Every structure is written in structure tokens, then in C-alpha cells.
Image (tube, rainbow, N blue to C red; front, side):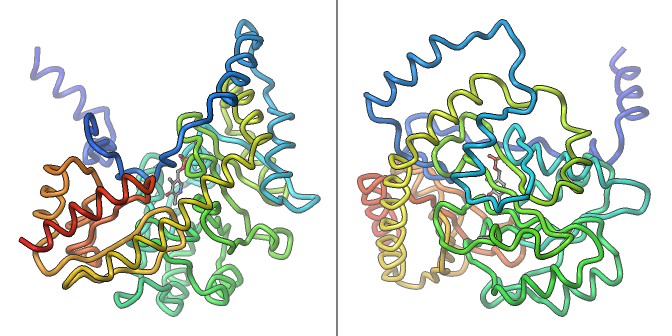
Length: 364
Ligand SMILES: *Cc1c(COP(=O)(O)O)cnc(C)c1O
């Protein structure tokens, strides 16, 4: 029986899927949760009450608006999508990456991005039967190696290039001119992934329409609505009309549509939270720089990449956890991330607690 079951799995499940391990989420119960780039703030009571009323009056017996028109309009306005550009929405921006890959996949086709970068580009390429080409970032400062990317694009002719701006897990913004050079040299689509837009003033949104192959992806996850699962893609209708064909009908549920539209009507609340996260980021950057032997990398996001003294990352990660603080350990994830840790910026109280734990561990 078991042998037969194994035979069936081995015969039918694609080898590249069998070789994967499922996306792992750390257990955070009882810990200060600073591992997943979440906004640490919840909603004020009066906003919660108003929201609860809205949900109370929402009917779930009908399918949602398939085009999510009201929410799309609100998103276009709050995210500064240029006039004439189209929007499509996804169940998180992860689903949009999948829609793009499904539309562009085919024998011999590949996805290109940079490493270390956002792991979903590689994973979704694999799901969709595409090769993934990862071009290493420069080791000193995680900047784009434009010459290497140009060479890889010429060699592999990627259907799509993904660039996270700012990048995850390194936190930096790339040089704008380098980005433009890549957009101009790319043989196919370029997706600028602006998941961390709330934490920087830099953006390619206003450039939409200037290049035939440029689209911009955003999400509401990092601004404080990670639980709703909502991402968006903005760009020329010619591309987005095609991607819309592979979108599953009703992919954005009615509770998400109503809740996100409501939240964006109160964007001032989120702007205040984001401003506090940005201020705390500066405090953390300065404090981490004081730790002996630690290298801190610049961040335009809501997390910070730092390098511990050689060989210390695993012990520091475990020591933090022992002291009740959960962050992300990136040691071993990529050669360029040796000895690297990635804490998310939390509330002032959480950050103070994290810094105290770091100070204790660094003094051991
Ligand atoms: C978090 C993240 C996303 C995923 O966002 P969701 O909308 O929550 O799926 C996309 N891109 C980057 C670079 C991210 O860090």
C-alpha cells in the first residue's frame, strides 16, 4: 500500500515540486514578533467599531464584485497610479506574481531576479515550470551589478525581470539610473515590486507609461493590512488585460474589498503608524551600529539587515528567542547573507526590549 502510494507520488508529482520544501512560518506564540515585516500597530477602538458596523451590513451570500471597482478606484487614488494606467488586484501580491508567471511561462522561458532577493520569485517560477536565473547583488553593499544583469539578460532572454525596490531581505534601494538601464535593456517585462513603498519616498509609479515593458506592483500587507491579503499591479492595459485572463474569478473576497476600502478611507491612521515606524527605524539603525563587531546595512524598509561578528548569527538568534524576541535568521539562506539577521521594526516598547536583548547577547 505505502509502496504503491510512494510510486504514485514519484510518478505523478513533478520532480521540481517534490524537491521543494513548503514555505515555513515560525511559531511566534508568547514572543515579541519581529520576524515578518508586519506593522505592529492595531486599530484604534473607534475605527474598529465603525469597521465592525460595516462588516455587519455586508452580505456574504452573493459573490464579490469581480472587478472590485470601488476598492480599485480608492487604491488608484491613494497609491498615485498615473491616469491611463490599469490596475488588477490579487489575493496578496504573491498571487499577482503567480498570475504574471502563469501568463508568461512556456518551454525554455525564464524569470530573472537578483539574489539575495524575495524568495517567492524563485518559488513561483518553479511552480509555473519556468527556470529561475538569480544574478548576485554586489557583495559590498547589495547594489545591482548592472553589467552582470545585462549579460544574464542577453544570455537567457528572461520573459520577466522582478526587482524589489526597496529589496527584501537587504532593505536597500537600488540606484535609480541602474534600474532604468535594466528596464531599457530587458527583452521582456520588468516588474518593480514596491511592497515597502510606505517606508520610502522613492517609487517608479510615476514612470508608468514611459516604458512599454514596465509595471509596478504594490501590496497593503506591509502598511498594516497583512491579514486581508491584497496586492495590486499597475501598468499599461495591454499587459494587464492579458494577466487578467488568468486571474481566478472573485479572487479578492468581499470582506477584503470592504475592509481595505474602509481602511484606505482612513489612511491618515496608517500614515501616522508608518511615520512612527520610520522614526523607530532610524533609532534602531543608530543603536545597532553601536554594537561591537556588528555591521548595519542602510534600510528604506520596515526591517533592518545586520551582520553579527563571524559565526555568531545562530547563537544570537537563539539568544534573542530565549529572551522572548523572534526575528529572522538569514544565516545560511544565501552566501552573501552569512552571519546576517533581519529584525522587523516594531513599536518603541518592542524595539527597546529587542535592543536590550541584543546588548546582553553581544556582551556575552
Ligand atoms: C512581503 C513581500 C511581498 C508579498 O506581499 P503580499 O502582498 O503579502 O503577498 C511581495 N514582495 C516583497 C518584496 C515582499 O517583501
